[in-house]
Length: 142
Image (tube, rainbow, N blue to C red; front, side, top):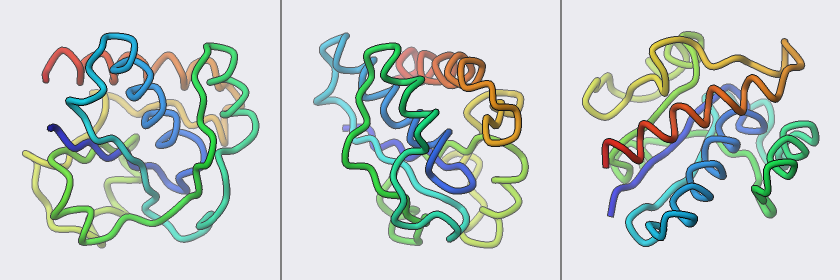
């Protein structure tokens, strides 16, 4: 089983979108049992909060459900537990460098560019497209 963790700043938009998009893609391909998928934040700002409503609506428009999610911060236990940790942008990487050991085999960007941050852009469709692209690459790799 491949254990995947998605990270973003607050764990209410991009990282839970990654979590639920990859879970949905794996399920649709009959591969759910091959993965353990979760998400977390690099900050403590949103701990305990659900998926941000516009992010949830964007997922729901595409038939992806995300119920029961509560934001949490990444831990050293996550570092030990997960095989791959994907962050969304360079800002996340800087925060992450203060929290976990550097390990490019384990911790890497989801894409070779920053994933659009809908908190600032308001463009949840673009964020969905970026994350979908990254999740499809993960499924191709594993």
